[in-house]
Length: 74
Image (cartoon, rainbow, N blue to C red; front, side, top):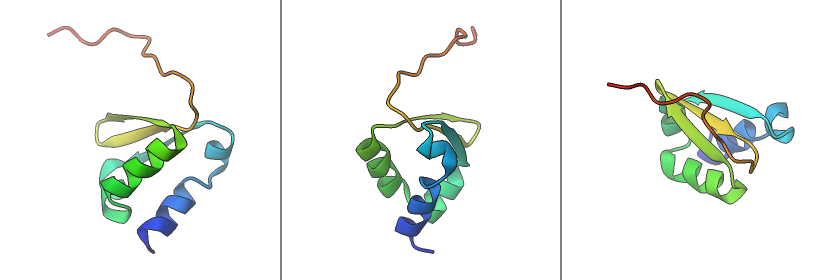
């Protein structure tokens, strides 16, 4: 599968079409599409991405993202 096909399949899901949220392992994104192509597509679509625990959480809309908890205190 080409990187372009992988990205096309990723962004063809029902959750994306409905402006929802999808999650993928960061290493899978890097392995199947490459971070350069992935970030270019994210920026082209105006989406936002959060990373946590090796996972990318992709917000498939242009609405602001806000965290409802404070960051942990060290």
